[in-house]
Image (tube, rainbow, N blue to C red; front, side, top):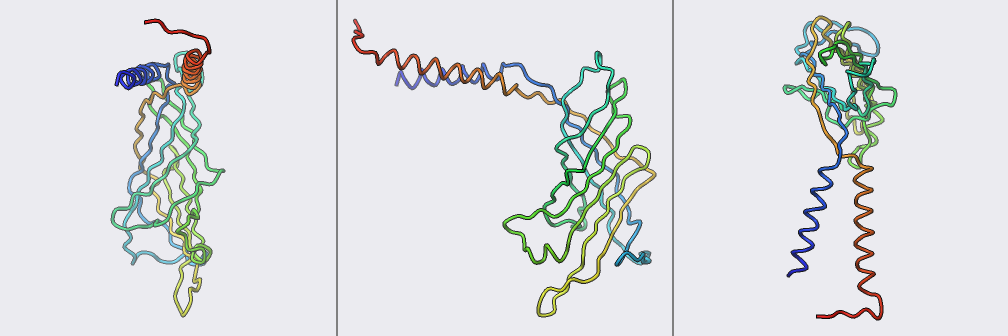
Length: 231
């Protein structure tokens, strides 16, 4: 029982020390667009009159994490986005019902003002349908989903969905290619910026390695032959 208590105390102490290690400061940026109405509709690259269509206006959200800059010492106030996360917000209609794979050519750049707020940005994402164990590979190839999203502080927001319609006639048949574009060039969305502190993985790993060596050395010393224990 005493051994269990001692090891529990050691684990608590080790956890406390790890949490007390210096942390890297990161900032999470999240952009949420306004609702974007349908602005173009193409069938096989030919524009069609969509005035009779009543499609819900979706919006989108893009977020990423970047390491915090010391704005007091650094002349640069620009952030490059990595590991972009995207979601299309369409509560009334499911425009995307499949997981998306972000193309490596996607990018994001933002610039902060003196007060730390986002002054300008340029976001461009290209995505295709991600193949998962649940993916129907036949329909995946026939539909050929593509999603392109762009947001610019000067030019507004746009989301383009391109895919092939399919029909069933004793088998799945690829029909015409459809392209829907939703955009809002007049209004801008909103930014939220959050500070996130993450423990330094290098220091945490070094600490745990040292702790493991100490435990191993203590156990080894107890096993040395000829060592007598007096009460």
